[in-house]
Image (cartoon, rainbow, N blue to C red):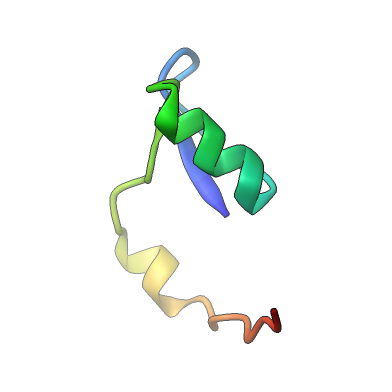
Length: 47
């Protein structure tokens, strides 16, 4: 999962559970959708 870390203003790739924790603690937000990100193929993940 990609999140925008508010402290450094950088988009970082983190584990889903860690990303959720950062968002809950208001340390990160989901990054804005950019045209570049839309062109990347979505990964099909299993549970």
